[in-house]
Image (cartoon, rainbow, N blue to C red; front, top):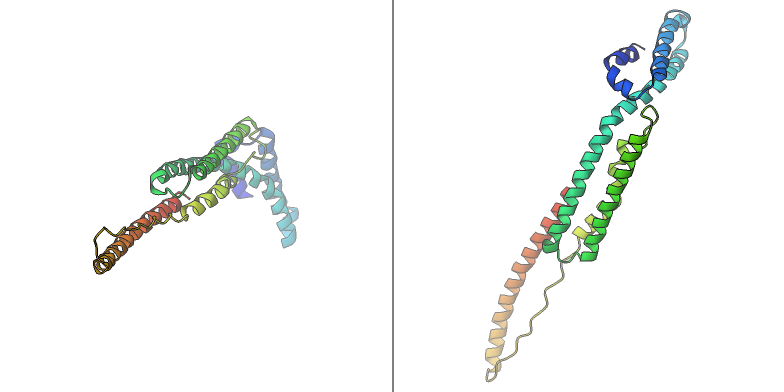
Length: 219
């Protein structure tokens, strides 16, 4: 009871922004009536009666506090989501060179998903601005990060796409070369090719790990 009465004073401006005069008066009158009851009829009341009185008083005030909280929480959630979308756009540009195994069509799928999320944000913000601030919000801050669940799954899948193997080279035996020389050179070439392949594989693995790391950070 005293918490409600104190918050009506301490958070006066914030509460006024999301309530009507009638709503504020109703909560204040309920708190006053509950206090009077507590020192009169409720003096000898049992726990269940007190609990019922408390719940009846708390419910409408908690809805007001929720609307107060959501004013800033929605704005913060949208700002965070917008930054994430910008990073995903930059990642798709980076993947053009670092992840050639991800096709243009696949990157376009991610870009289209980003645009769809931005449309959702614009529609919800416009609807909230047009709505009655004393009523339940059009959308909540908890809904905002959920808009990228499908997009995150797509980016995560693409980040694990393996790089295509390099084509094998076939060496032709020069004219006049003996079979022994050919075998010796072939063995040397095989060893060199194996070393080059190992180096290239390590390089590709490093790039793939970097790309997956970038994707994980954006998600």
